[in-house]
Structure formats: C-alpha cells, structure tokens
Amino acid sequence: MDFQIVIPVLISFVISVALGPIIIPFLRKLKMGQTERVDGVQSHLKKAGTPTMGGIIFLLSTVVTSLFYVKDYPKIIPILFLTLGFGIIGFLDDYLKVVLRRSDGLLPWQKFLLQVVVTAVFVFYLLNYTDVSLAMLIPFWSGHYLNIGWLAVYFPLCVVGIVYITNSVNLTDGLDGLASSVTIMVAVFFTVVSVGMNSGIEPITCAVVGGLMGFLLFNVFPASVFMGDTGSLALGGFVAGTAYMLQMPLFILIVGLIYLIEVISVIMQVTYFKMTHGKRIFKMAPIHHHFEL
Image 1 (cartoon, rainbow, N blue to C red):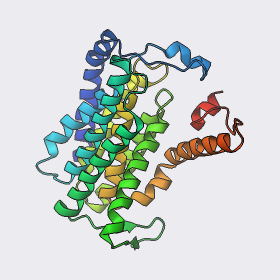
Image 2: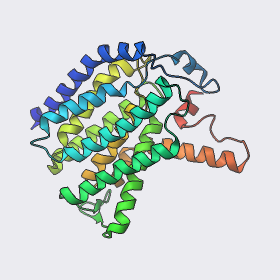
Image 3: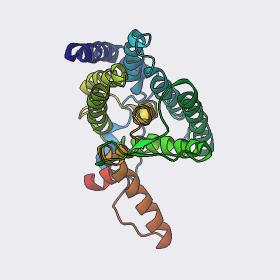
C-alpha cells in the first residue's frame, strides 16, 4: 500500500519538473507576465513581468497522472472534473487579463456563474453516480455525521460551500510558494484519510502532492513563475471536491485554517473600510500582505 501511494506522487512530480523548463519559457515568450499594483507591497514591483499561468504545470501533471488510475479508481473522476473545471475558468480569466490585456479578466458575474455551473454538475454527479452520502462527518466527534437530508437544502448548500472553498484557496495565492505549500499539507492530510477510510481517491490526492512539489521548485522565493488563477482556482476545486467526496467539508475549517483566515481578513477589511468611510484594520488584505508590510 505504501508503495502504491508513492508511485502517483513520483509520476506527477517527474512530469511537473519536466514541464517547468518547457512551459515557463513559453509563457515568457508569450509575455504572460505578472502585473503588480503600484499601491501594493513595494517589494512586489520587481516581480512584474514574471510569467504567470504556471498552474498549468501541476494541473497537467495531476490530470495525466490521474488518467493512469481512473479505470481502477472511478471515484477520482468527480474530483478531477472539479479541479480541471475550475482550472479552465482560471485559465480564461488569466488569458483575458494577461494576453488580451483586459484588466478585469472575466467579469465577477461571469466568473461566479461559471463556478456555479461547474459546481452544480459536480454535485449532480455526486448524488446520482456515486455512493457518497449527503451526511457530513463532524470534527472531533467520531462516527457522528451532520445529515441535512433535504435535497432542496443540500444542493444549494453544496454549491455555496464549494464556491466558498475554491475562492478562499484563490485568495491565499499571493506570496511565493504560499498556496502551493499550504495545499500540499492539505493534500497529504486527505491522502492519509483516504487510505484510512479506503475511499479510493488517493491517486489524485497523491498526484496533487507530487505536482505541487515539482511546481514549488520554480515557485519558491524568488519565484520564476506564478500559478495565476489557473492554478489557484484549480487547487480550490481540488480541495473542495476532495472534501465533499470524503464527506469532510466541515474539516476544511480546521485543516484549511489558513484559507479561512485569509477570507476573514478580506471580509473584515472591506466591511470596516465601508463602515468607517476609508479606515483600515490591516495595512493590506489578504492578511499575508499585511504581514509583509
């Protein structure tokens, strides 16, 4: 079993490391460079021009590795769909911003609508083509589940939960290696749980671990490539999809505590700014930029 877990990690890692020297120069050639806010963290200004959309590296390594296992592990299909679906949304957003020079990328309502559609397909598949229960495991209360029971409530709640989780991971992306390293730990946690529960999704959780480890070689400070929304939304889709497949979305509040803190910091900043007509709690939000400043 241990060796079976190591194999997808190694495959994905090797693919990711091999893709880096190919994709990064290609992105640089297409001038898919990162733009930095002049009023933001001043040390980030030197990062302007660093290739973005690098999430393609670990997204491809995860997809390719998962395809080797999909026949014997059909439960990875919905997770793979959600990961790839959100990754494509992020790619469209990055492409519009960086290549076509549309400063806003996808409009907020367009991005939200696409996320809801992809999420709705995932939840529909979950309910109709898997044996995954609607009940959610309650943290620190072994064997006990929160069972909403009513489909009319569960379906929209799932959609809201998945969109929230995905965008919280997206907010965490903002420092060299931050979203990558945090999500590696989350993916390792899910791998351990998957093996313990014999849930049959460990090939994709291991593939994400390996793909991100390979990507980190290019993404640690000073980063030679950024993941962009292509990567951060894909990781959000992975985290959300895995959590729901394991019936553990409530555990995201614990294992994904950093994601939660990032979201709360933005909510607090925006709310306080509006209530006080211009005052701020943090020097900048999300909170990782506050600590930088």
